Image (cartoon, rainbow, N blue to C red; front, side, top):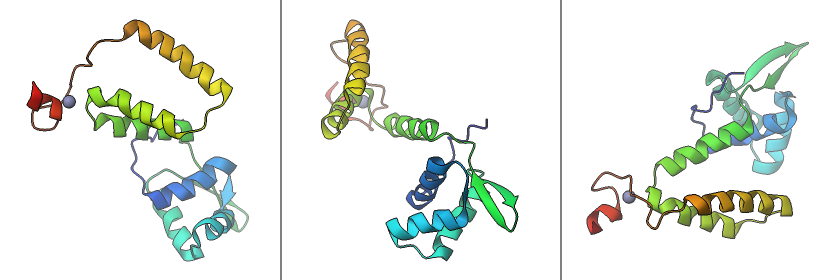
Amino acid sequence: MAILTDTKITDSEWEVMRVVWANQEVTSKEIIEVLEQKKDWKPATTKTFIGRLVKKAMLNTKKAGNKYLYSTDVSETDFVKSMLNELFDNICDRQKGEMIAYLLSQITLSFADLEKIESILNKKRKQAVHLVPCNCIPGQCHCKIIE
Ligand SMILES: [Zn+2]
């Protein structure tokens, strides 16, 4: 399976990908129907985004009779993880814990989620440090001004 998680997509293209991820194999008509409901997009608009995703190799096309079926080799989980890593690469290591705490405080969690997080926290507690080292270059972070 090709991992194309480095590919950049726009928010609109992401809307199309979600339909494909949820249904595995879809026609443009099915994608159009979902996004007409959610975003009020005209068929031509959705088709443009589908075309861009095919160009970016995020979507595969297969001819089935007189229509095309769209699918993807990129897993949604891998893609989202790669986006999260990319986002976290842009912030100081020292701020990451606070950002995770913020995210945790914002979302609803299942008991299973909590168990998973607790088990990670127990491991992390053994490796914890008093002050996370700053990984930034001078001029891109508040830490360096203070130090
Ligand atoms: Zn820093």
